Image (tube, rainbow over all chains, first blue to last red; front, side, top):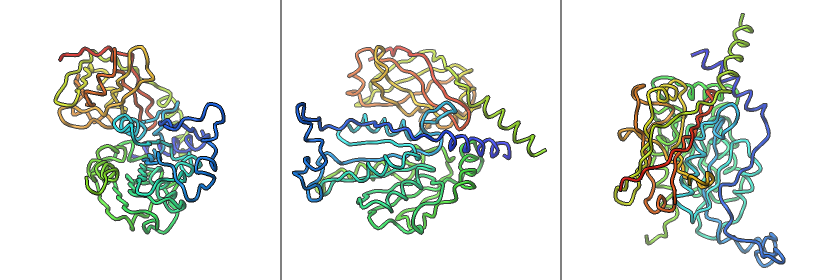
Amino acid sequence: MMRNLSLAVLGMALAIASGAAEARWLSVDPVKAEPNSGQNFNRYKYANNNPYSFTDPDGRRDIYIGGGWDKKSFIGGSQIVQSYAEDQKRLHPDRDIQYFSWKEVDNISAAMSRPLAEGEPLNVIGHSLGGSQAIRHANNSNATVTNLITIDPVGKQAGNGTKPASTGNWVNVTASPATTDRSDSVAKAGRVLFGTTNTSGATTSQTSTAHHGYFNTMMGEVKAQEAIDNSYKKPNE
Amino acid sequence: MRLGYSLAACAVALVLSACTHTAKPISATAHATGENAVVEVALDQRDVQVIKDRELYFSIVVVECADKSKRWPLQPYLGGRMIEGGNFPSAKGATVYGTMPVKGFQEYKRPCVTLEGGGYLTGNLSSPLVPVQTTN
């Protein structure tokens, strides 16, 4: 147990030290730049010079935020959330599905800030350190989040644990396995280093017997994907 | 004493983390079940043992044999049980499978699979491309 924890603390430190945020877009914007002027990519021109009253009709999106060691790197990388997001993107090519590491703070902010047409969903899903980032961004963004899904979040978030004002539905899962595996040790070390996440304001909060790394299992247990899929349905569907 | 232990732990972690295990899938097949294509990958005992010991998370990634960038990662299952963090019930050889829509699978001219993943400080998992034999 102590050995696992020591390794986890070391690894967490290495992850922090490795630093540089890696931006990787899993989706291609369906809007192509005009070949001659590129004017449709001008942030004012695209909305008839009034970006505050017009919105991006292609904005319906799911934002996945992975935790430590999610993104592939030289020291490992479980790719748990990254692969899940990539699979979803293949299954739903009509959606704007984006994946970020928890460290890509600016890119997450930018993705959440892009305008949506009225009624289009914005779902934010975070695992581990990505979970607290998801809450932080939901708190700090003006965007209306349809579903905020936090899977065994790690780290202090912005706010006091109440549901972010602009969030519709917040589903949280806390892992509480009977035995400890490496992912649990890493999560424990993460909570020592980054603090615990206050999820008291979640609309639905559930405890799982799955290990910290079992993102897919926990997503299934709270029917998170169904909530996301339902957000894309029109009211009469 | 504590410092020595920490340094030793550091060394072990660095050695472990630098390791990529290259699995050698025995075979890969695919068949249709309703609207889904079931992609099966047979793993030998050694690969299962490493994945289990290192608690590796992995996906069965369907790619075009000639174009690895056309990827579709599938969550592996074994006998209806989701395989996560190397939670194989035993270290015996096993055939894991993942599912995807038949329509999506049919977009691949020459489908191959590769295994891809990693763990929490226990390195990465990769494999060579294995052509998928289609059985129906």
